[in-house]
Length: 248
Image (cartoon, rainbow, N blue to C red):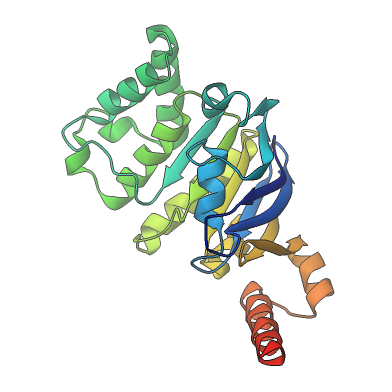
């Protein structure tokens, strides 16, 4: 489980990047933290990962507080990012061994993890190929396996389909569903709202660092009177524009 409690980040001379953000994601749940570029999604992830110190508030993963135990907390997390490249000169097996050692896992546990991930992610046909030879879909499966080698209870996906074609995106959809079935708590940060509707159980709509709406698609439709996430965000943007005009 992951819990954010009034998480806030400010930078000198700028509006709040993240403004008292709170949400909870349970095991086996996919939560979409959605918003346009600049909404605060990446800043939020960096605070969860311990790369940025919150101005106030906290993030808790499986009982570990980022403010108190940042190193222990990182072992509870797996990160999948479209920008996280693979080491092209390593084979898939070598890559997983490398990251397993980086997390301090004993060799026997790494080998068991590779065996399990090979079965779940379908890595067998290219496990001993260099990463430089992999197709886009194979690279994405390897990227997912890399994030799971230490069997984290919480998985963060940052724009996981960015730069992927239809086949590569479908790979992500299929394996996010597998992670859900494995009982992982999953946070998906994306601005691809149509894809989020397919992936996520609940949504948090983030704009200018603030959580504007939160709930299932059905509850958000009822609350906003809009049918799709795209329409909801357009309504938020329109409200903000009206408020700016009134204020001026």
